[in-house]
Every structure is written in C-alpha cells, then in structure tokens.
Image (tube, rainbow, N blue to C red):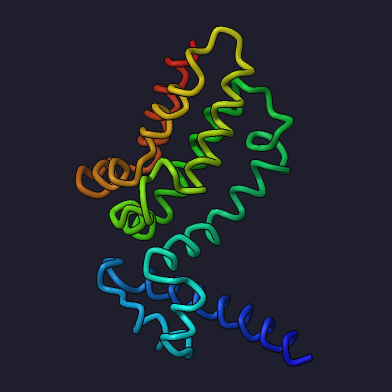
Length: 192
C-alpha cells in the first residue's frame, strides 16, 4: 500500500510541476527567467522532488514539450483527417507540417528554450523530432515521384524550426496565416 501511495504522490507531483511550469511560461516573457526553484515554489514541491522527477531544467522543458505535444500526437496517430492515418499522403504531408508550425507558434517560448538548450543533445536525436521525421518520411514514401524521403523530411521540418519561426513571427512580424500559407506553398511546390 505505501508503494501505491508513493506512486500516486509522484504522479500528482509531476502533474503539479508541469502545470506550474506551464503557468510560469505563460506569465513570463522569457523561459530563461524561469529557474527550477521558481517552478518548485509554484508547484508547492521541494527542489529535490523536481530534480528527481525531471533530472534538470532540460528534462523539465522536454517533459513539458511532450505533454503539450500529446494532443497533436494523438491526432496524428489515431485521429481523423487531415492529420490521421486515413488521410491520403499528398494531403497529409502539408497538414502535418501545418500542425507542427501551429504547435510551434502556440508554444514559441517553450520550443525556443528547448532548442536553445540543445534539448540535452542534438535536436535531431530528440524523441519528438525523431518521431516527426520518421512519420513524415514514411508518408512521403507513399507519394509516387516524391523526392528522397529521408532528406526531404529533414528539409521540410527545418522550415518549422523554432528559431526560424521565432525570427519570422517575432522579429519580422510575419502574421500567423501568412506563415502557414508560405509553408503550404513551399510544401506544394516540393511535392509537385
């Protein structure tokens, strides 16, 4: 019984920490301004609990990113068109890229912080990137005459990198719908 309670406590603490980190990201201008101590205080847990659950700041950023990405992942893996597996490949590729772009626009501070931190290593080895690349590559392979799927998947995902999205949307002020349209045009040109 005590082991069951400790697992429940750990799960509850994890959710509290993710909710606290999420709230702090929403309130503060820069992810760099948020410390592990800030998150622990906001969540009402000790710093030790935070470090045991996530290891370090990058681990916390990665866990928050994965939690926010969950609904997109669910839609892609088992949802209806245009993201779900029943979507024809020529329609699914632009829908997938649009979903990634919108996710990054909606989560700019978090995504930039994770990419700038290195995510704990190469951004191309991060589990979310590997999942997206594999998915996009596999869908591209279903399109007759599409250019080399492995490289093309990397190139298309590069168009949604957080630093580029931040540069275009933040610094240059390109409106969201214009970015989405430009990405759709770029993708269509590549697939045609």
